[in-house]
Image (cartoon, rainbow, N blue to C red):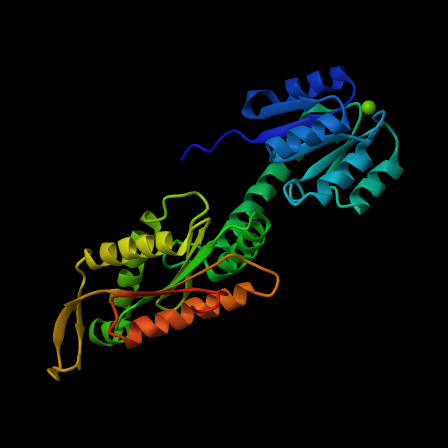
Length: 315
Ligand SMILES: [Mg+2]
């Protein structure tokens, strides 16, 4: 695997210092430079770097103020910052560390020290990024996990409320999953979860569409800017795609036959709810509405989609 070159942003009002940093770090890094705090912030938000080298003494917005603004922005808050302090200024060093800087380097810059500190903090940053991404992914299926779903739902709820756009949510449940586990064992159950997750994920074509594992054999799909009819069409596509996997599934007691073992194809049931978010409604309410439609889909025979416009008076 070839990792991309780490992106480093150096902010310093003295161009000679930036040249020195460039010479010390060489071609192993992708170096961006800015000659003021303001320009540095613009760079950092436009294309968040992996690490920032920040001069403390700058006219206008100094290093501390620049750092404070980086901390205030969720987009740049987690980027490690190494303060570059003037010679013999232990106060600056402790002040920077107290404020949450990753480290400091004092001037005149020693190239070997700079390289070593940068390497260390890039490693820590990479490990942190990896942990953060793992914290949002379901280990078995590789789709988003419940936590990422909860956070994304909050964000999309607010976004659709601002723009008065429809937000659709689909609860998806594998039919007769317990029987599959009982008949074929948990490994087969896991393989089935992975296969279904993969089909559902492939079906998410727009960047904001999200598929997540909600728990057990239940998945949830979030479709922002999607009307009820659009959501129904999408979930019907997903339902048919899962059916076309043709995973054979043994179940028992499918009415009216009471034959103990009936071979059938693996299917999913889906409950859809669509809302234009408003003050008197909640995201939890939308989830509950989709859940009750899922219950309805199960009750009326499974392998189908039931849907509702949430928050609208029934005609
Ligand atoms: Mg300076």
